[in-house]
Length: 380
Ligand SMILES: Cc1cc2nc3c(=O)[nH]c(=O)nc-3n(C[C@H](O)[C@H](O)[C@H](O)COP(=O)(O)OP(=O)(O)OC[C@H]3O[C@@H](n4cnc5c(N)ncnc54)[C@H](O)[C@@H]3O)c2cc1C
Image (tube, rainbow, N blue to C red; front, side):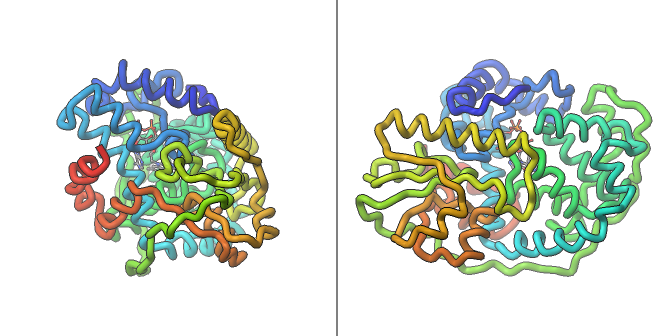
């Protein structure tokens, strides 16, 4: 799979997947047939993660093709992202604690041979090494491979999950603070305390069509222990009144202007905010290039609508003193920059989908799932 960094390519990919492969999604989605054969999953995450296509757009198209009952699994997966985001929004300290732990662990492990072998794909586990190369080469891994990878990293190679999550963020085109951090926490057994995900030889063999041999894993490890608990923070996700002739910021990780509920407003100009260096986790050159291309593509789309726009660096925000609006960038690197620099002149605009769905993110995903028909009814 080669990811073309434009909305036009993303929409083509979405349409093709819905027309040709959605029908078998629930039956085949758990198989990782290898990087040359990804038709059993959508590979849309690099675009959805950046707001280039929108969850509701994906769901709407899928429902035009098949009924909710036939589509339920796919829709659940699509909304899983919204759930993880909401879960983290309600507990933002999970992200800030993760970054603090990472800084310390990174230092402790910088010369660790076991860690170096892992990130260079030189371990004794062949499938793991293969996924390391695939991650760096294709910047995407199948969901099941992400689960196996994380599990092997934590329980067989005995490396800290925080470093593994960093490695994923550096190389994934869809790298996302919520889905990635919480995905790794879930595998480790600290997200649902005491419940971890243990990869096993038979499961990998079955779902990779027996592509790998010599899979010797630690299949009896116990979950990672953490006594940290996070209470739900009271945060206001309401959007304040939007005055005309103001500037709007669109951050690189949420370029969802077309679906933002605010596209009808008259903004004086739109600033597209790139962030290459002000990151706690440094991204690979390929990921930065992918993001830069997506921003450029968004700029062209805005210019086609005769909207005055420009790409700026996140550092430039420190020089803006007027009151401005921003599509909310969610808990993660960009929001962290705004908070650390106390940029109080930025007023956030929230997506209606998030405002409505995040109220159901206080508990586990099984609870959230119950509200999916309600969420869909609200927006369809
Ligand atoms: C350890 C770990 C780390 C992960 N890190 C990320 C990450 O950084 N960014 C990211 O976008 N996803 C992450 N995921 C979730 C998931 O693996 C990917 O979203 C999915 O593999 C994307 O491939 P796809 O688009 O072909 O998915 P499909 O199976 O086609 O699913 C359709 C869409 O549903 C959403 N989705 C599917 N599964 C999940 C999931 N488990 N969590 C959240 N959303 C989901 C995605 O938007 C995806 O594009 C991670 C999962 C694990 C276990």
